[in-house]
Image (tube, rainbow, N blue to C red; front, side, top):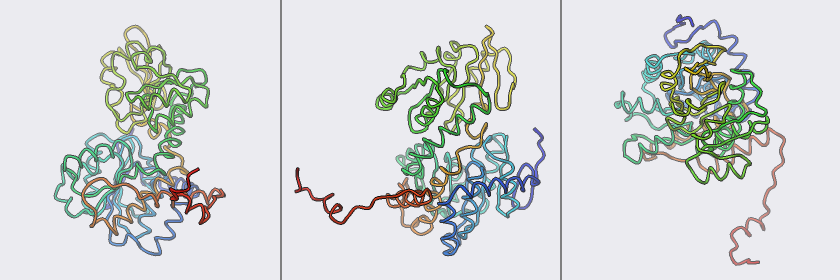
Length: 425
């Protein structure tokens, strides 16, 4: 890939000439995100984020762009970077740059470039941070601690980031309040399940074009994301096998009709493997040693450490990119193992990420959390805070209304019955 870039006083992207294509992608996403667009209309009038400086580190997709422009419409100054080296859509990045948004992101950046982009977003001295994976928050705490005192609060989008931030909070290391957007019901029960499931299979199919029907499809981790992948693979006729360390999650997988096996056993029979755990070393050398010829391996967890590619590199006698986002590793005995998207997020690196319709609710939560922090952040203690229940229900209600769904309402008598402990049988 060419290492030329387009640069300006407020951006560095792959090619500013891609802006028109990016704008069309954003227009499409806007047409599929009615909740966020309704919030944009409401809060652009209120200017709810006027005076706020928001540094964001989140996948640069067409859906993210709708969030960015909604934050800007509400009065915020924005500076943005991508949260994964392979998830930035260069067309969308160009469109945001052309629209005047400060953005530093391009597809295929290396580690040094990744953190350079984050550092550039922090030059604005943000009052709020918006994160997916917590790399921005970690950068503030580890490399720019002087900024933490002026940051009112932040948000975190994903399971792995929330888990690590809760660990920081337990150790007293988190220096400002962070809202766990991931833990909202209108995020994890929709984005994580239906978004991850559909987009991950989309990425697998784009990278391989294989038939999933009849394949043994191994899902490592049966949380919300793993469940979503299993649901969609099962719907396409695959034989789903789940691997787990948590008994209740494993039991759910069995009662959903799937087999549950240890990875050591599943490695021998799987045709397609997808990791969704947030933990390192889920698939390692001993698993590659017993995999079938032609096995496909990919990851949909936030970080790329779930598949130990160093082990595979050491075992391989040759490697080639045989399709876009599909690398063929040939082992000493002639077996071939195919790794998708370099072990990074297959749904974003090999496809377009989650559908706009489901990101509508997740990003509505991000937006309303930014508004909440702007209004209340100074009164919140440093630590991880949950989304209020009424916000979850409000977002779900708006979404239902856009889908022409009817919703019953309890009568006053029914409301009273809820708390009538003397009613008995």
